Image 1: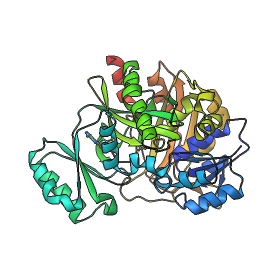
Image 2 (image 1 turned 120 degrees about the horizontal axis):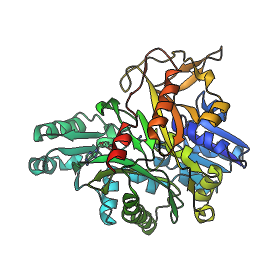
Image 3 (image 1 turned 90 degrees about the vertical axis):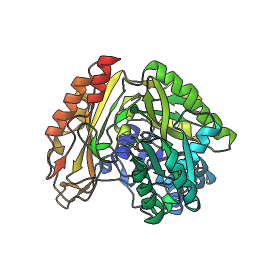
Amino acid sequence: MRILVLGGGAREHAICWKLKQSPRVAKIFCAPGNAGIAQIAESVELIPTDVKAVVGFALRERIDLVVVGPEGPLAVGVADALDKERIPVFGPRKNAALLESSKAFAKEFMQRHDIPTARYAVFSFEEQIECRAFLRHVNYPAVIKADGLAAGKGVMICETEAEATHALDEIFTHRIFGEAGQRVVIEEFMEGEEASVFALTDGVDYAVLASAQDHKRILDGDRGKNTGGMGAYAPAPIVTEDIIEQVKKEIIERTLKGLREEGRMYRGVLYCGLMITNGYARVVEFNVRFGDPEAEVVIPLIDGDFAEILLACAEGRLSTVLPIKQFQASAVTIVMASQGYPDSYQTGEVISGLEEFNQKREIEEGTVVFHGATKLDDKNHYLTSGGRVLSVTAVGFAEDLRQTITQAYNAVSQISFNGAYYRSDIGKKGLKAMQTV
Ligand code: AMP
Ligand code: GLY
């Protein structure tokens, strides 16, 4: 099998790494990839959202499967275009990717199909007067979200009406989110703890993967700015068997049925971002792709031929590879970021210690480093090239999350670069939940 993976972060490194383990895979291309991914896949200079170029490349290189990492290409219809050429693609069509690319669409979809989520209202730019009136009467805190894709930054939690009005000015008057802020969703604030559940699907059948918890804030104790994610672990004990059953029945199955009824083809992974309140899960958001850094812990726990599974999804025959087994293990990933992230930061810092992480260590110890943003200099040194540089991952015994966390931090301590920053409490929530569950 010849596979093209779109994207170039640690999520895509984890995807390529798992695909590479499949005996059916002859060649992996990754566009644009990064220096770490280049160890196992050929980098391709292609912009993933350039749909024409992606299709052209896939045809020329006789690609058997395209796996889409990020949401951007899906939102502009890369799956539709590949489908038209009969190239199997793991990732939903544009009209289904709306679940992520339009928060207003997602909320209305959830309402149509009775999927548990926070109460909400949608207002367009033209409805500002109504919107401001509405803000006078809602309960606070309230959540204001820009409708479109805003790289995880489009959500504002407002404690008072004054804050909400200010947020609205930012979106509608100062247009801080540009086009993405043409409409806003105003939502009830949900108390609880967040976790995510991933379902691989061909639109009809589905398989639930290990649950995970991300750590979105920059500082320990979930304080400070929001980031793309500073670390994750799986499985998440807060997501009990009962909650999984509820998520299947009330969220995943209703979503897939709704998508089918509305003629929105979904072959890929459905990311259910959940708020768990008193043992009941409601949807915070849907994403139409793997999470990053969640992918770095969820994918290593899949016990099966990843290429075979993703191709089965893409070809609408997931049932032929079910059930998908999971390793009885725990996984932890720690993001090493550049000092200053999520604001501005330096790049081009030399990374040392990566040589220590080889396949032997991976197999014997269960430690693997996924590259998020690296490049090679002309002396073959790895350099930092972005905000989230490395996802340092450990897989260990299921019963001993504490040991898996230690193993991941041990690996982190062997890697260094100027200004390396990471949180020191990744996975602690899991330890706490284990004591109470
Ligand atoms: P989203 O991009 O919709 O996932 O929102 C980003 C983050 O904002 C989420 O991960 C939550 O931490 C928080 N958030 C969003 N919506 C709500 C809500 N209705 N209640 C509480 N927190 C929320
Ligand atoms: N880690 C959150 C996301 O990928 O959206």
